[in-house]
Image (cartoon, rainbow, N blue to C red; front, side, top):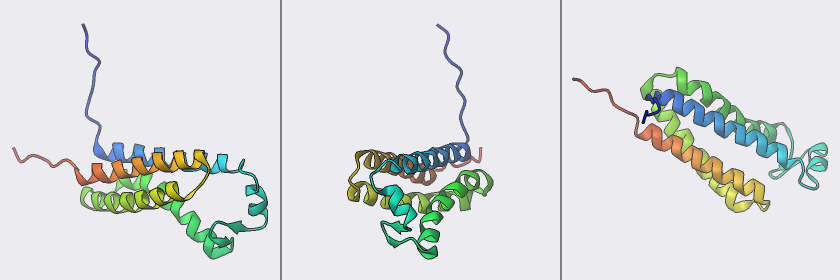
Length: 137
């Protein structure tokens, strides 16, 4: 029986793909959140879970998506040493934040996304922590 062909995927590509998955989850979760009763009214009235939707609050909230968006390309473009550190730090911070959200929010779809995102960001940090070393042979 013939075996399927496999090849090792560079860790930078793995990390970038995982950040892309996290970003997709964020976007779809935000989309489905629009169906939560009162959400659109809150948006129209500039109300967030963190208070009034002024420029400072919106800047803070949007920075979460900005960091994730940038991690998709930075995971490929940065040198290994810096890349490893940033993926560990950002991955762990996001895991803690998402774990808090999964505990705090009430809607099941939101909990599901937060748990999946937390698993993905923890896996990102784990992969970066275990970054392969080159052999000197």
